[in-house]
Length: 73
Image (tube, rainbow, N blue to C red):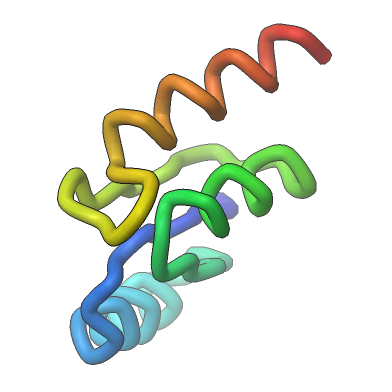
């Protein structure tokens, strides 16, 4: 499975990436909502794990934007 993890805390993002990779997942990481939207449009993911409190575009806004863009394509 291909996962996208969105987490602004660098150490936590790395911890999640490492742990999920060790379990056999392919993991990409984004550190803010805008990067998450760009990644989700550029690449297909089986699962997106989104932090809700992100700098700039928060997780709720990023989710709405991802859904809007993916449904338009």
